[in-house]
Length: 185
Image 1 (tube, helix red, strand yellow):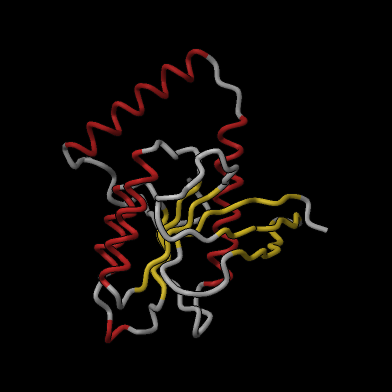
Image 2: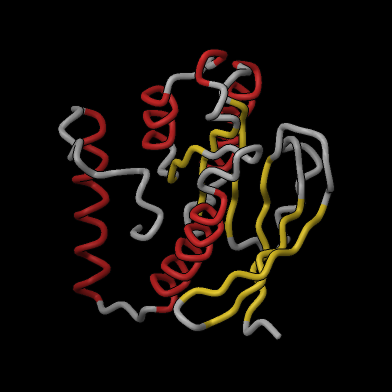
């Protein structure tokens, strides 16, 4: 019996099951990831208790990538920063048919403060890593939210947010910060 159940909103751009639950064991604690499928921002119930957003596109279909970018925009516009957000490029095994470059996808992920990973469900590439990464991101975000903050930490957080904004505006952000590491915030 899993210790915790986490709800995720993946935007899958393909046909298939609408809901699915998967158990993941991480650090000796079993958790259930419950995926609830949506394909757009419309009809989205903002009151749902969602722990993460997984936005999936196909590397060989530019239209799905454009929709994924729109969905990431919806999330950030509605200030869903407290939730883990992961941009998933599926079908990375179809390199010859690729219409979306890895660099472009990483840039979008960084812009919308999301993590990025490439997968292939056909050859089972990075699927387990994605599931563990999703759970890791959820736990890190929850730990960050539960941490009590002093006045000094709140003030420092405001200063850091201001610095981050200016760095983004003037492109001085740390380019070595990886959006691909699913095990850190």
